[in-house]
Image (cartoon, rainbow, N blue to C red; front, side, top):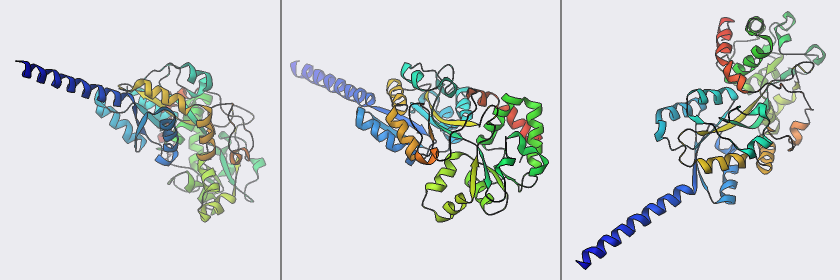
Length: 343
């Protein structure tokens, strides 16, 4: 009887030891789904691991595909955090019920209220603006003023911009709905379409390249694409970027449109505490400085300076609406863009 009893005790001890090891392993990791390219986020995640001992398991992919994956996986998802670009996409994740609200004094102290969801479903981590770029020698910047003015007849055949299915344009239009209302924004969109130099296609870099090559004289693009062209090692992109200049629109009014990259904690996060700790790490000064220097984006924190390259473009006034509005206005933005004939 003694031998079997010892065997049972040993087996039980082994089971508890195994379970404890599994629990300890789970407690020292966090799983991240990221729509940001690995090179733009992994160095920071590695630093987090070095400082905390918490392993970060990273899965990268397209933003819409990751959201669909979270929806499909439901409570069985391994993901603890979703990192993505644009407040519109973060709002979609919130509506899809794959995020949970998080209250963090550390985050609320350093991230301005307009760059985070009011209830804490997502937080901005870096900023980008979407200004006007113009072809030097062809456009007099004195003739530029606002996004609204781009619908004027004087700009007919001069404008390059991405398609209406691009979230960055949808959020720009959503911000204009907030400022001007649906009817006025739809009238503007119709005028903008008439002023397009070519059918919308390609990414933001393609719009800048098109302006540089003379296909158009005005382009709308995000700042970090322009910075990447200026600072990159592709001679053609450097040459194209040198032919255009940046103009900050709406400086006499609400300010230039800005957006974020950001993150939220998934609804069924198994390592919730580790995920919150990582989110707070991504908002600290060291991480924000890395973002500013390496990702060509503006820090979310006011106490961290932008990179020298971004500073060279000058200071600007940015739109002060809470970016959660961009997601709420997205359906109306998409509909009016379609009615305006924005392909």
